[in-house]
Amino acid sequence: MDWGAGLTLLDRDAVAGESLRVGSNRPHVVIVLPGLGAGGTEHVVNVLANQWAARGWHVTLVTFEAPGPPPYYHFDAAVRIERLGLPQMKRSRLGAIGAGARRIFLLRRTLRKLAPDVILSFLTRTNVMSLAASRGLGLDVVVSERNNPALQDVGPVWRFLRAKLYPSAFGLVTMTTGALNYFSPAMRRRSWVIPNPVDLPATGKPRRNGAVLVAVGRLVPQKGFDLLLKAFANIRRDFPEWKLVIWGEGPDRAELEAERDRLGLQGCVEMPGVTSRPGIWVETADAFVLSSRYEGWGIVLLEAMAAGLPVISFDCQWGPREMVDNEKDGLLVENGSVDALAQGLRRLLGDETLRKKLGAAAAASAARFTPEYVMQNWDQVIHAVLAARGNKELSPC
Image 1 (tube, rainbow, N blue to C red):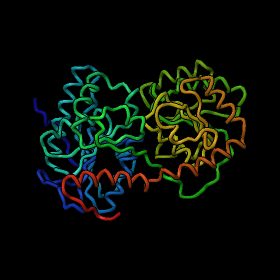
Image 2 (cartoon, rainbow, N blue to C red):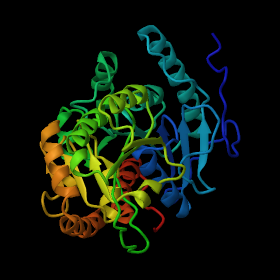
Image 3 (cartoon, rainbow, N blue to C red):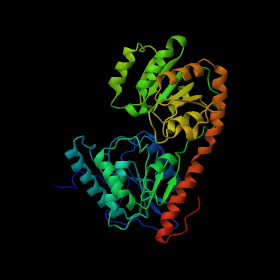
Image 4 (cartoon, rainbow, N blue to C red):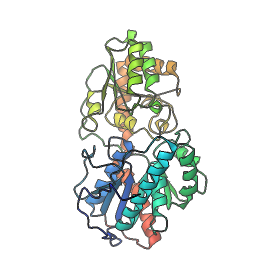
């Protein structure tokens, strides 16, 4: 089999075989992730890459996706993007093994060519493949878990490989202490807890006094939109002026649309898909709800708070409790309880004064998670790797 077939390198200039290792004050950071679509992981990678490139660092993004539409988030022209041109992983075990092996082969070839100072890898399966691909190359890999490892089902094979390979990583980054504590001491001997950043609005635009409740996320069971539909059905007669808009796309669309119709919500629940540009949903919302069964962080909740939206969320593991101080800057309700969510929504939608109070407090609270604060934490990760390699000085911010 020709493992190199279909390899598409560099949407932006590259020289085959050229090592981009640079001096200690201008490090070369390679970031590996599945693709560059819409999502919390892609957002934080966008922030990191653009900030580091603005300092003059060499930043290369390596993704498994094929060339196609431009990234959902805008990247600085100095950020190099390499797409390995691979199809999605197969669902069958045998197909997944073959696809995984090919990914590892092509990723190893790319990492050998790039020879970076630091490799940052995001998401469980990609982390496993990054560690396997870099073995024996003398490269330091920091892996980042972006979900709830205790509840996210990655399957027995990936779970086994994660347990075997994570101890070989230079370090581990999670977004919450709960996620970090899930891992064995061997996996977290060098670790950091770094939340996702949020972009604060440039101006304090006052919220309109409308009646649009918004939820955002992939249409998958984790996001709990089936529970949200049931809760909204319980209160809709009391709030006929309110409509629910669920932004996002995913494999459960048909099932969720059928549930919406079964509950008689066709006229008051919209599912318009993915927004045409990041954050457009904030401009159309008057309140926000997070109905996830579990989270790694829940960046959309923080984005809503930063925009001054009143928020309500399931108290799921992990993320919401780190962001929301219950009854002060948002509402937390019993995780997974349709009745509790319906009661919370009834309070929120029925009390304009409460919405204004929570929204103002949420905007102030979200300022804790600025990109500048989060960048300082990620800089510490890069410092640790370079210090271990003997490169102790970085260019100033």
